[in-house]
Length: 285
Image (cartoon, rainbow, N blue to C red; front, side, top):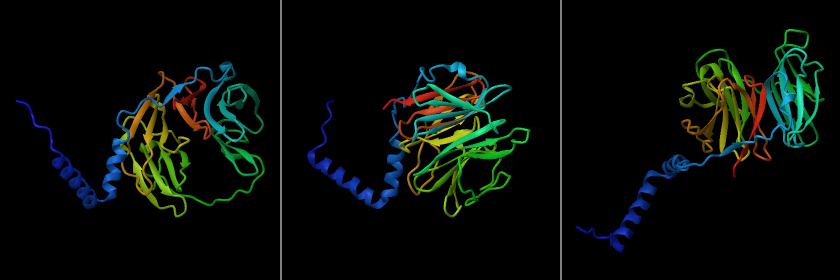
């Protein structure tokens, strides 16, 4: 039997009912609905740039860390090993520029800080010699502690190997709490604990966390399962639950250790200690 189409009056009534429900439920419910439904049917976000770097043979050690100087178009790679250059510098296009070993033994993490007048490279070093177990800045600056949170443990605000940290534009500090298999979030000004994500990390803890250039997603490296997880960035004022949008499955034994993002081009760089290389993934849109 043929169904009758809804009448114009019925459609008007249905629209009015939805409007009333929106008023009753409040904007927060609608925001939550939009936040989840936004990711339905999401297409692939990144692709591997097989032409970066131009000469991969410059990677002669274990590539533990990578950092992007978006201001000057430079990519720094820290690697470990005997008789290998500890810091390699590439152009954004993938050309090798230079390297250095001075005062560097076993780099574990690397970060580039850009200011209005200067740039500096920060390196954490876990070597056993006179330059080991240090944090070094390669450029003059003032250094003082202005923010600190945490202690060893599994409770709220405690860490088991806090392995990576990043900050978003609204002043939230995101910490990859590796061995607790979670990301914890704090207020940059007050140090207040704002929430945590653990449901996305049942298989492996987060080793590295970075925001994409548009701050829509977080890129998380999971070393033991050779994977990059792309997570939805939460709304301002709400941490909510972890929402995994996509994953990039790397080859076996790649072991992605740390990542960084070019905040101009949006490219994601991955330091892979198992494969002894750094790879670049570029956004598709």
